[in-house]
Every structure is written in C-alpha cells, then in structure tokens.
Figure (cartoon, protein in one colour):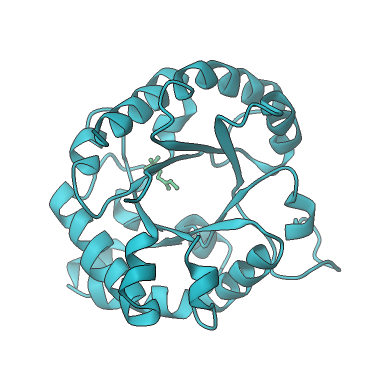
Length: 256
Ligand code: 13P
C-alpha cells in the first residue's frame, strides 16, 4: 500500500512572508488528512522561514525545487545538498522547466539524485515528454529512457524511497491534463514498468509515482482513483491554501 504524496511546486512564486502565510493557512487543513503525505516546495530563499514556521509540528513536509550536483565549489547562484539538510526533506530534481530553460540533462539529473541521496534528501524525480514527442507517438520510449538514464547506478535500496513525478510537458501550466487513463498508463506501465526492469517488482511496487500537469481540485479525484497514480506534483493550484487543501482532502478520500 503506497501512501499518496501531494506536493506543491511553488516554482518562482511567494516571498518569505507570503510563504509563511500560505503554510500557516494550509497546516490546519493538511493536519486532518494524515493518510496523505503533503509537501510544499517553496523557492530556496523561503525555506528557512517555512521550516521555522513548521518547526516540530511535522504535519507537512518541505521540499526544495532544485539542488546542485557538486558538494561545493565555484558554482555561482547554486545551492548544494548539504545546505538543504535541516531545511528540506525532499528535493525536486529534473523538473522539465530546469531541463528546458537551464539545459539540465539526464546525466546532471543522475548526479543530482546521487548527491541528494548521499545527504539523506528524498528526490522527487521528474520525467515527461514534450508535445512533439507525444504527437510522434514516442512517449513510452522517451519516458522509459529518461527513467533508465536518471536512475543509472542507483541501487535498489536507494531507489526504494525515491518519488517519481510523471509530468507531460504539454500539460504543465496549460490547463490541458492528460486523461486519467493515459496518466495512469504512463505512471504504471511506463514509469513503474521501467522501475520493475531496474529494481524488480517488490521495490518498484513500493515506489510512489505522481502525476503532474494542470492537476487541480476538479480533476484530482479522478486522477487519484487510478491505481498507479500515487499523488500529484501541483504547480498553479498549490499557490492557494483553499485549492491545494481541497486537493489534499480529495486525495485522502481516494484512500478509503
Ligand atoms: P501546473 O500544475 O501549474 O500545470 O504545474 C505542474 C508542474 O510543473 C508541477 O511541477
């Protein structure tokens, strides 16, 4: 039985003060649904304020949106895994916006995953095809290739805790969601299928695979009713406490 994980990727939104306001508004809602793991992923500069606001209460997990692959060094503007320890439990790695706008490759993603794991952080590894790849009918092949490349050299023991987010690029911020059947097929047959090949059935069945891309209060119940969708990585709809709180409630109701 996989515990659903609902994660809010705030992207480049919210000042530290706004971030604290949002987690304070979310906390009483999230606390009612312990059957779901809820995570917020604010920008780096918000992490200390958010971690302090949630100190010791542990109802909500905190994640970073990125991490560098090196321990330390001359990488202006970057943040290392060691710096995130104590501030975040999770870290989003390989988001399509990082791949698209900042040239991240599967090789970088793979190195980042390894360093995050070495520091005890839990990666949320993002994969997903472009509109062109989708229309060319190569989604399964492409996503499977990303999973294989991103997990290269990662042991079954390390992989077991990792979360994978399937985010079709054409569905991100566009209002176009993959139908729940298609999302379930890619999360299950393709992503989990690739994980079964890499790590065997027991590990792959225990790993959580989220869907992301225009997930919101209206479509989350249908997505969560699918057997291979273990939660969502939510962008726009995670910026408002009522919308994201409703999504966490609906995800919790899907558990019963
Ligand atoms: P939206 O929910 O805004 O489409 O963003 C999805 C996403 O990229 C989450 O990482």
